[in-house]
Length: 203
Image (tube, rainbow, N blue to C red; front, side):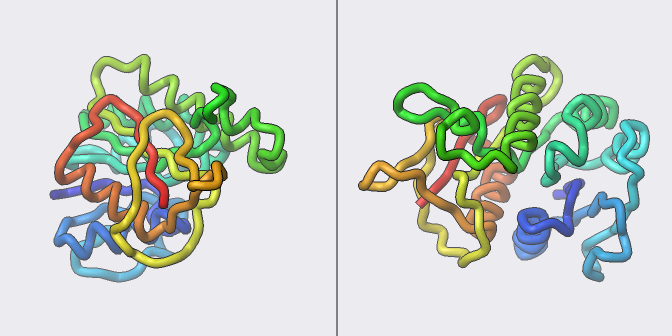
């Protein structure tokens, strides 16, 4: 497949890039600093100024778009219309944990022990999810990691959930590695199971 990846040099995005390349896909890495994209025969680096027109132009003529960017760095109100304007229907988002629900129905971002510094980005992630739910022309999937989204190993051993936070046997929020997250994301692109839905994964 030919996949446009927005944010290909970030912590999650760089793992997504490597996972896609490992599966023989061709990737257009859409970033603000294309010189930071690793050289590879199946990677084309494209710079963007973050505008809707710039993003849409870089995204067009692909089989799917993946975005892996902080929501406070690239506004959902710019990102979603850019995908729509590109003409690409399949859109997969490296989402946030903030909109996941705890067993008591409280969103993760509103939970008492959720860190204040992470709240602005998490709330904007919720805005993006709401925008996607209101679209009628995109085959989107929003993948929420747990709060603990960390460097680790590619194990292939994790659980799936939908809108509720996955918990450990002790009732605590679980975690996921960037590497396993990238694996789940690539699986969803190749074999869609959650079109126009959000899902979460965790150990």
